[in-house]
Amino acid sequence: MKITQAFTFEAAHRLPHVPAAHKCHRIHGHSYRIELQLEGEVDPNTGFVVDFFDVEKVFGPVIEQLDHHTLNEIPGLENPTAENIAVWIWEQIKPLVGRMRSVKVFETPFCWAEYDGKR
Ligand SMILES: Nc1nc2c(c(=O)[nH]1)N=C([C@H](O)[C@H](O)COP(=O)(O)OP(=O)(O)OP(=O)(O)O)CN2
Ligand SMILES: [Zn+2]
Image 1 (cartoon, rainbow, N blue to C red):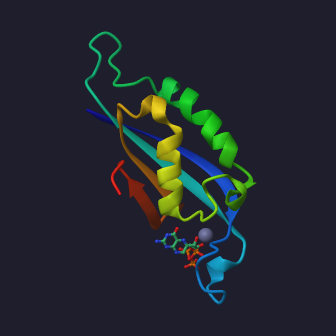
Image 2 (cartoon, rainbow, N blue to C red; image 1 turned 180 degrees about the vertical axis):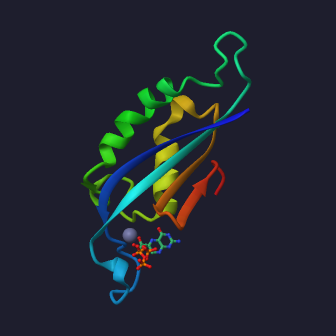
C-alpha cells in the first residue's frame, strides 16, 4: 500500500550555475509543494501504513528550515534546483527512509523533480 502526504512552503532562491542571462540566475521565489510517498503493509490494528501525524512530526522541522528562507544559504542547498532539493529532503528524513518511496518537489504546478533514493 502506498500513501502520500503533501506539504507546501514559500522560499527564495537563485540558480548560480545557469548563465547570467538566464532568468533563474536572479533571485526569485516559488511556492513549493512537496509530496512524500511512503509504502508498507497496513497495520491491521491501526489501519495505517504510517500515521500521517508521525510523518508530520519528522517533516515539520525540515519544512521550518526551508519556509521563508533563501534556499542558497542552507548548507547543502547552495545550488537549489528542484532535483537537489529532493535529494536534500530525502537525506533529512532518515527516520522515515525504511518506508520512503519518493520525494517530489514541485517548483510550479507544471515542473517537478522526483527522487527515490537512486541517482
Ligand atoms: N531541471 C530543472 N530546470 C529548472 C529548474 C530546476 O530546478 N530544475 N529551475 C528553474 C528555475 O527555478 C525557474 O524559476 C523555474 O521557473 P519556471 O518553470 O520558469 O516557472 P515560472 O513560473 O517562472 O514560469 P513562466 O512560464 O515564466 O510563468 C528553471 N529550470
Ligand atoms: Zn526558480
